[in-house]
Each structure stands twice: as C-alpha cells, then as structure tokens.
Length: 426
Image (cartoon, rainbow, N blue to C red; front, side, top):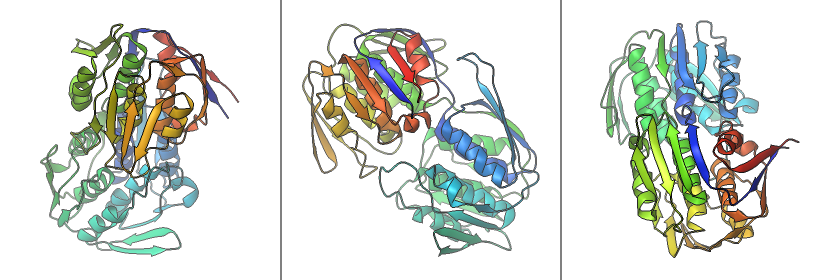
C-alpha cells in the first residue's frame, strides 16, 4: 500500500495548476444517463473516484473514455455516451466504494423508469443517510422500496413534476432531484436546495443539453421538464477544495504560490478566513496568488456550514494550519458528526487539540514534529500531508488511497513548488 513521505521546513514558491472539481465531475458524469447522445466533459480530473464512476456507468452500458496529455497542466477530456443502456442496476461491489455514486438514482429513474441501487459506501465520516434523495424521488412520483440493502425505485409511467422541499440543503439530493426533474413531465420546484457551485455547474451542463432550469445558485430551483436531452460539451468547474487546500499548504509552509485556473470567488469564505490568519491573497490574470511572509499565522475561529459558508471539506486542512498558529482557535463542525478523526493523528505530531462534542479547541504550537500517521478519510489524509510541511523531521502518511480519491498528482504538484515530498510505492 502506497505511503507519502514529507520532510518539513521547505518554503513553497511557484505555480500550481488547479484541476477540475471531483465534486462537480461525478454528478456531471451521471448526467450522461439522461441522453443517448455524447456528453464531453473538458477539464475533467482523473481521480480514483472518477474511475469508480466510470466503472459504474460502464456497468449500465455507458461508453466512457478518458484522454489527456502527459503534462501536469493539461486538462483531460471525458467522453460519455449513454446511447445503449443495458440495465438499471448498480451492484454493491461498485457502489460501496463511493457514496457519491448514489447520484445515478435520479437520472436512471428519469431515463428508464426504474433503478436498483445498492445503499452507498465511502468515507466513514458520518451517517449521511439517503432519506432526502428517496423523498425527492417520491415527490416526483416514484415508488421506493428497500430490499436486502438495495433501493428499488420505479416510475413505469415516467416521473411527474412536483414540489421537493429539503429539511436541510443536501448537495447530493439536490443534484439527484435536478437531474430527475429535467425529464419529468411538468414543472418541479426544488426548495431549500443546496447552493454549492458544483450544483450550478451541473445545472449549466443540463441547460446545454436542452434542459429548462431557472434559479441556479439560489435556494429555489425551478425545472420545466422536457421530453429529451441532447449531447453537449461542458467544462468542469475548477476544484474549490483543491484550491483551498493548496492555499492552506502555502499558509502552513510559507512562501508565495500562484494557483492557476481558479478564482477567489470559488473560495470567498476561505479566502476571508485566511486573510484574518495573516495570509495575503490577491487575484491575478491566471488565478490567485497566495503568500505568507515569515510571520507566524494567527489563530482564528471557524465553523463549517453549507455554501456559501466555510466548507466541511476544508475543515481538516484548516485545523492543520491552526495547529501551528499563534494563539487558540475553536473549530466547530456542523455538517458531519464524525469528522474529527484526524485529531489523534495530528496529536501524534505534537498538535495540542481537545475535542468536546462538535467543537475542537486548537492551541497552536511553535513547531510540529514529524511522525508516522494514518489517513482515515479523504480530507483527513491531505491535512496530515499539510501538517508534515510544517513539521520538524519526517512524516510518513499511510493509507493514502483515501487521498487519491480526491487529489490528482498531489506530491508532484507540491514537489514542483519546492516541497520535500515523495510517494513511496508499495
């Protein structure tokens, strides 16, 4: 099993190309189920989760192919053709690898009138039930049953527009409802919809395919169903989590790094917080520049929240930064109840962190110490790499298959800006 070794102390300087967003690419890939014409996604990342989704789509009869040149700054092309669907069943062995795969439910139901999907797996960061997804499908006329770990959904006469009201703005459930409504008969109103940029990106792609959608970016989305969707070419949104992660890497290690192909608007809440920490962030013609001089970062409190608030997917990375900051910070996690699993690993590196319920009290230390650590989930794994950038000596992160689900060529990108980092192959 691969590991990543980091030797701390190097300042970062140079440029990092930000890739397409994993959290945008996965639902965009599922949208290929809505049409029998090709959907071409440009700026597509080639991550473990994207490969998992390709496997799931291929099992349903979608022709999926990926191409990209060898350079680290070249974007990929993902071509998906759903002309010859062969079934509507997604087996446990495929779905268990990735919770986001459940987003195929809506488009499968809309296109074929049926779906049999295993209850999903993924990182162990909380319960994350699929109730919201199922209620949304029922609101559009689907019949839902649970049998031996599978969701059995049917709409033999097709889906019908309706009113979908979410008790909480769920990203995945909003995406499922949006895709299902695109081919439903009549109008659908999605209320208390999640507002993440990835949902706007999915909506723009659906519109390019012929869908009629209004209200993208707001908490109420209205979809007028159409009979058929056609093919399209669509660029995948830049990855705001990757953007925030490399911004925090620069904040932790110090230096001056330009993040290419992204924008401050994607990480506005994060950028505001980092500026309070003492990090300089400025927009450039090619992206954003992040710099930290010799001064030690300042402690700042943070609370995760649905977009446009501070994203839960950057909480672990921010905690690594606060572990080396001057003062004490409080980090409150409001999205997932089990997303502090990185705390014991950071403590192995000398971090002073005390957790009480949904809040972590982080007292910054002058210097972390390198140590062998274990990744527990996707974002926790990269937080340990970031902590290693600021630690004395050597840090070895084990179980980095978690990291490969969401970060493409991470060690190569960090090495190119001066980090002493390498992957140790199994």
